[in-house]
Amino acid sequence: MPTAAALTARIRLVQGDITRQPVAAIVNAANSSLLGGSGVDGAIHRAGGPKILEECRHLRARLYRSGLPTGQAVATTGGKLPAKYVIHTAGPVWHGGRQHEGEELAACYQSCLKIASARQFDSVAFPGISTGIYGYPKAEAAIAVREVRQWLGAHAVPATVTFVVFDDENQRLYEQALAEAARS
Image 1 (spheres, helix red, strand yellow):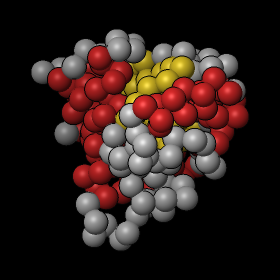
Image 2 (image 1 turned 60 degrees about the horizontal axis):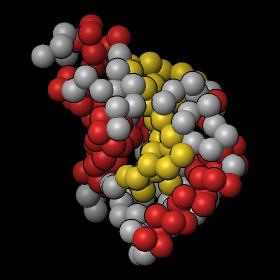
Image 3 (image 1 turned 45 degrees about the horizontal axis):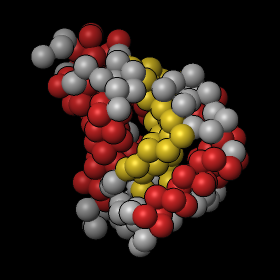
């Protein structure tokens, strides 16, 4: 089992634009249709170009006719992005925490990390999944830190995980979650 310091060294926090991250794969907080949307999803599709949507349409027609189930993930090309791949995951819509949203959000991180490990992606960048239009409270969504630390504690791949936050509030929340995790 790696030490807390070793785990901490494998996790980065960046405030900025996830579409500009120089990593092997970025995670898309996608809607279940896989056909683009607003927020992070729209930004990734715009920056990555039509190849991402083309692959998403193919996946939708072949494997996910009813849409990507919440908590699951699938990978496509990164198109024109610096990242070679995009891992799309369908996060939960917040219903006050009464409909297993925590378990579904944890499953998003686990599914993405399983893909990263299976495909040997050395680095992955995550946005705040479900914290936009899906209404997941930002403070509670910081369970991402716990999920990633648990994964990294048991797996060598990915070598690094970056949390990419958009605003000062998320920056503060993730700094706090990372500091608390490093003490435990």
